[in-house]
Length: 240
Image 1 (tube, rainbow, N blue to C red):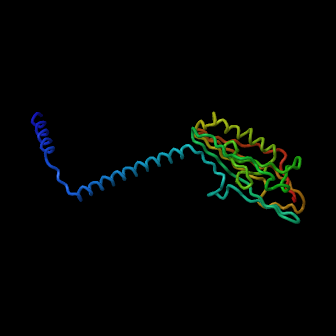
Image 2 (image 1 turned 180 degrees about the vertical axis):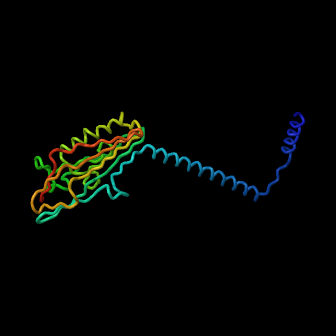
């Protein structure tokens, strides 16, 4: 071991005493190579930082599918034919919202717009007012309420109340202090009692409220919440 250490020391002494001879071209090449390596390392570091930021954003932003971009079954068009005119409107038949544990509640939800797209053509059988605009995904979780936001379906006030108390309040339990407790998902399917073509040339036509079925997945456990139909129902008639 002493002999090895001695030789290392001797070599170091010898190397340190050697004159270093390099051409200007060689030095420039080596400097360029070093700068390229530094630049490459910087690009890799920047890329890693970008990936971390994207990953963080992706993991903390809940998604709300309010526009049926890849499923034609999420909304449908209904046309009502009267004696002198027709009316068409779009209604949502499915929507969902999904959160990851720790996600903040979305604050982008909006209320409904008046008048409804079906105003004067589809009314509550009881009272005769325009059929209520029901959020399929509640605004508390980011659901939109605009006429063209693909998240609204007609129903009676009673149906709206049943949806709230029998399903939506159950999903509210998945949150605490404005954050999702676990991974959770709310799915709502709406099945209207009428078809896509309604004829009122012979006078008003009554239909029951749509059937709403909700499923909630909380921490991997999925449970169904069927919603009671409203007792009064809806009436189609020729509007203005």
